[in-house]
Amino acid sequence: MNVRRSAAALAISAALCATAVATAPAASAIPAAPADDAKRAAGPYGTKDPKFDGVWRQSLALLAQDATGVKPANSAIAWLAGQQCADGGFAAYRADTGKACDPKKGEFTDATSAAIQALAAVGGRSAAVDKGIGWLKHSQNEDGGWGMNPGGTSDANSTSAAVGAFAAAGMDPVEVAAAASGKTPYDALLGLQLDCSAKAGQRGAFAYTSGKGEPAANDLATVSAALATRGSGFVFDPVGKDGHKSPKPLKCEGNEGNGGADRAPEDASEAALAYLSTTMSDNGMHLKSATPGAAKAQPDFGATADAIMALAAGEHSAAAARPLQWLQGKDSGAAAWAKGDPGALAKLVLAAHAAGADPRHFGDADLVEQLNATGPAPVEQQASEKKSEKDDNGGTGSVWWIVGSCAVAGMGIGFLFSGRKRQRV
Image (cartoon, rainbow, N blue to C red; front, side, top):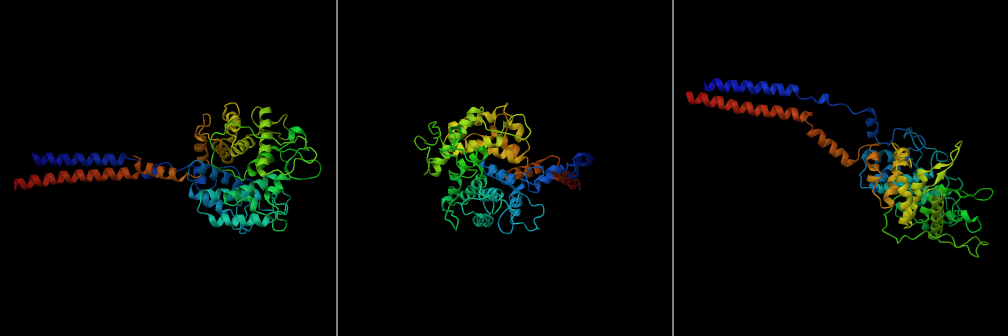
């Protein structure tokens, strides 16, 4: 009787195990990653054509992730480093990295400067950073500034981006002087600032570049120069409370004739921030841009985010908080503007970080999570996903656990069966 019961138990165990293995999902049944996921895993952020901004948005994304404690994927860092040209510069995007760059037209100061800042931040790419710094030094104009391309007329945006690159590489921009003239980036920038000879409402603003005719205030140039004249790049440590002090405008009483000369870079930054604060207050706490063909100027979310960073770098946290609140508001449209765009998301993340806010709670949005989703999964997320796959009940590990458990159960019953036989012998 005991033998028959043992045999019956063995048969039942075998049947149950066979059923369990049969019903357990096979590894091939796990859904394959969508095509977009596979594309993002290769390195670049975003799915839009990177022709004009591939390096720029990649650099901003890496900077924003690093600033918020996220370790970017190695493939994302390698993709950016792989975009570097042989002479150290960067193009906007290289579809074929095996093809040589055009040093006169194909390489850009802004892309190179942003890439240097990103690669310096994530670490482990000192050779690429050094080559990029060498390219910037070689491309510096005699007035101390940089143009969009090597040899181009110096402009506030490109010169400011270069200042950020030197700062990120641990160099004092004031010591980066043109070999022929000895002029520094600050000489070039201060030459573009509208001083006491300008109209009262434009004093302290920066022109984009020196050109024919009277210089005009340019908000994009002003936000870039306001940050650069603080000797800072896109990322810096947020400061604490500053007593709600307001930026100081240019002192022009009795100085209109000589244009308010002899300004230090910090004073130039203060004047630019005073101009930006007044402009944003007049516009409902944000900057505007005039789009060609538009009936009226629209909110410029990117420039507003840059202005917040500049105000925070100048230790004006209270002044930075007001436009940040506007960006976070549901009615601003900033969330919709940035959705799915790694460069735009990164700007909002960096602005919130600079102002001491939490970009993971940007209104109702988690900007960091949204940014991470536009590119390769961060290192910690990759580890978590791999662990989840191993622990998944539908994975191959669970199938072999079932098989192993059944084998153990069968062995136990077999021992019981043989033991019963020996007792009868």
